[in-house]
Image (cartoon, rainbow, N blue to C red; front, side, top):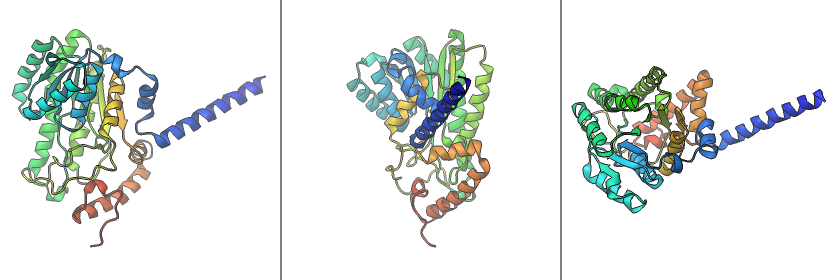
Length: 336
């Protein structure tokens, strides 16, 4: 009898491991997040009626967050610099949901203008009465080599991506601690977990966000109902590359990035909302082989360095040849 039980136990463990390996082979997110999305609380039920403030809501992940949150029945604050684009997003939210005009507040916001963040936060509280969720999504990327890049670009990336996010969080968090509940969700990047060529300043700003929010989470041990969550997406279909910083503050990216090989924005956002609904503290969202690569960085860094050096050389060569940097992992470099 004992032998039968032991055999059954080993069989169960083997099946469990095989299932997880197969799941990981097809996974586009970490297994904790995938299990939450499949078996956890549904975002439609958890987020209905919640007051959610989304920064960077005029395009990309922020815009898609607005649409899916609207369909969940969340009341929204849409913020970015371009008010006309925010109004467009609001109109589309209303057309695709049961929300009324008063359920969506368009609130133009510049993360660089930190002296305005207190007044903006008070405006939100006066309008809705409270804030349930802040989604820090605003920011910009980078496409340039360090040796060719002005220090002003690095300063701008840290001011916008890091300090701008910290500043707004500084205004919203006391409101949440007073209520004893809330969620602050920050869109970081897989480059907040490991580095990559052409993004030294961007990766630094995302590493800073990871360190900040991981530390902040430990300070809020007396507030168990306040979620601090960081989201680390890989390549996602958006305009982040077109709007990226280059080697000079005032120089635009030369050509539009190809989007075909990237994760659909809708899939990324549905996973983010599943993570929020299930209190997931850190989310890795990326298609293979990117997801496996970042697992390697965590568990086999020596192997990860070997892969990184090989692929980085190709990416830099492709960039210098004028090819799309995001395709460099899939396209052989041109011979010089």
